[in-house]
Length: 532
Image 1 (cartoon, rainbow, N blue to C red):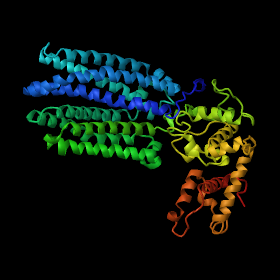
Image 2: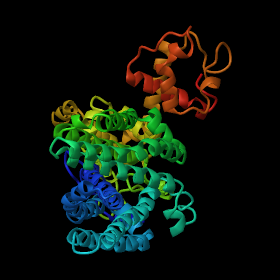
Image 3: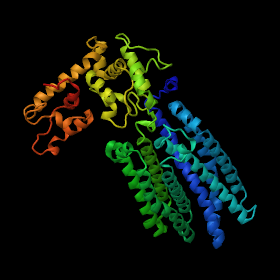
Image 4: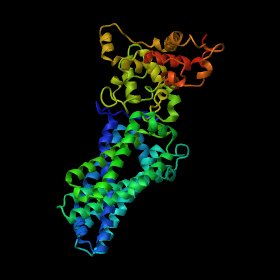
């Protein structure tokens, strides 16, 4: 029951998840850039020595310090920042990553130490050792940096595609999980492309002339491998994703789909720029143009990482631990016992009429605060403004059906009712009524909730549907059409009635009426003898 031993770090307005993103996205960009930079330096020095290209060699010598600083300072500091933030935001998941991959982390830190030593030696040994020896040091720097990626990639992909690990824990199966290899190819191509964008920026600072044009053209060629390899490896990667993740990115969550499309579109713009401007017309690449496309590279990194995190919902470790830190194996238990009694840090263990609102706040912290703030990023207040108590409680009971990327509510009925009451009370209009003594919440509505929803849904049925349909048997029965369907599925059909069957009128009731009707229809096969 370790899941409930950790309190939740409350970050008003921003939320813990956004804090992680603000640290992780720059780190991912810089770390990939540093890996690609190591490959760029070593390979380019080899080419320069082979061809006797002193201009390229001088360019590498002038810019190698920046790669060293990026690796030693910014990358290391933001890496520590990620550990600090994920340990505060999601300690249970962090604990699993540490304990399951302690050997992998040890290996990665060894490679990182080699990378640091080689990077320092590479910079300080220019003109102090022979050219071949110096280039060998560069390859040690590049190889150790890439090996860090080789190890960490397994840990990152494990969280989305753990494979059989939940049933049969194995270090090697977890590390080399289903999406490991396509992800490794994607990240390697990205590393090389980012190095090319940076080299293009540094080349744009050269004085106009042959040196400028030659260096810009050379840097632009580093985007060619990504142009060819990224579409192939991305298609491979998508094919390894769980079904729900594919649905989310293909329209199940519009924001995720938009970000995915933007990532692809901006990548295409960068590649077009690399060929039609940088390679064919290198003289047109000045500092502002190069900076613009370097920023677009950062944007693509941010969008892609955000999508990668989002498609893992409703899990933090797929099919093992939900985003609210509840293990999939604990859902039934918590629905029986409640989550408040299982939490060491909660002050309320049982919901009563007297403590219902404070209990609801503590349930929110335990079940929702990992992803939601109250009124900031992903704020619950604006998302539920105007919802009634009954509607909110019903929605909470069917979270995973209404929104596939949300985990199921795993508290008991009283805790669900307390959470619904607290969320309803967030509405300023409701809060005014509570303070005026005109509105109060109690646990009696838990038993009444089914009757309330059923009565509301049946009333909507009578008004909108009973003229053409019967409930069961007779003329055009509805029960056989919706049997086995969830609230969310029925609600989606109601929205599109006129498109489903051209002879049916559109449903012009309110959202609340539509949800009540959907809930009533979904419950037809559960009622004894059906609704007559």
